[in-house]
Image (cartoon, rainbow, N blue to C red; front, side, top):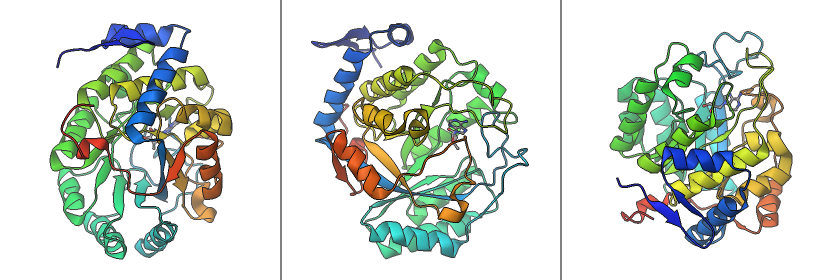
Length: 344
Ligand code: 5AD
């Protein structure tokens, strides 16, 4: 694909790794952010979508160095929700009128492909219009087709970082190449596919971030789940710092410019980084989705991917969206790629 040169009243840059890297390095971010905001408002007509999130298990067989759910962390209390409890929680989301249920967990192979497929089918039976997103990590490749055939619409598989070196260093026992292959397979199967990075990882450079944004541009995902690194006290990265709010906003804006059609949630980690004020800024930088947590209260705090996770009520989320000048929208909110084969 030929690299575009973006020229508008406001900004002028070449969509290459070098072009992006120098934008990330410059202090001036207002123009990029306002360009992304206008683009997003125009394409999504001022709506911001709300999704219902169920974090159904915090068991994980991986050992990602930055994550509190890592297998070797003995300090967290592990939990698994039963199929029945997952269904009950999904029902609450559906009753609220939220048309997307997101099922998220650590890489927990305890749940078989049959059990997960059964949950998907039962949720779809309650409301056939319901969109269902899975974010359950790397599994046997045949499982994904099973989930798709059971009715799952979307799959989020964050690539975490597009720097192969960094990826392999911080994901012991996993491989960057396998991750990318899995992401490509998900798209091929027919899922609305989400990718996304962690911004401000230890040892990550601006060049690495530019690679992430070029990956968005080249892959044109349906969703981008991207958020700041937040230290977690039980990991070896506990003393590393989070990135600046400014860098995160710039990354969101560039992600939006790279993929005009994608659904881009404000990461829940954004709340930890800069509370509601920062969430509002993110919504004005190209993000158009907010996640509402429905994980039952007594286990929610154990989903400790990072420290100081915040809980926001549904009415609080609606208020925030309105304060940012957008309209809360609980409909499915599919990727615009579904409606047009043309590149936005
Ligand atoms: N900071 C920010 N995001 C994190 N994740 C895990 N640990 C952290 C952290 N310390 C994100 C990763 C992973 C998901 C489970 O949570 O992107 O895919």
